[in-house]
Image 1 (cartoon, rainbow, N blue to C red):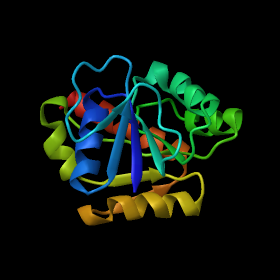
Image 2: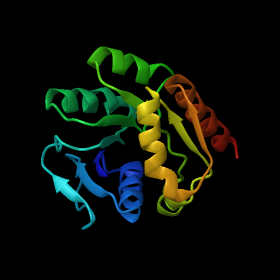
Image 3: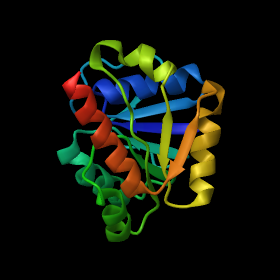
Length: 168
């Protein structure tokens, strides 16, 4: 599967690592990235023909990233990995007329690469059954329990888990 990572911070780098390990073709775009890993096809602008685009930017940059993808006619499913307020995915999907899923990560920065390979759970806030099946297939080799829900619930789960982790 052709995948694209938008944003190569902790989450984006870990997601790229996982996708490479799962034998997917990985493209990446990040204006701030210094030295991306060799297994990433690093681009100066987003690739227009991919199956899945993972938005791994800071929360404040999610809409800008989606707008840029739409303006550049980037094909494929858009998937927000970032922590966003409940309702953001649905709002952006309606605003830009594209399919967007929310697929939160549950990583600690220090252990991001280990935890992305062995997640405690996989949550898919689906825009539609077709795209949730695509993500289930992508993550299938991890053999982890996968929960399918709506994007707003997925966003709420992410924020709740973050809040609980902050208290430990």
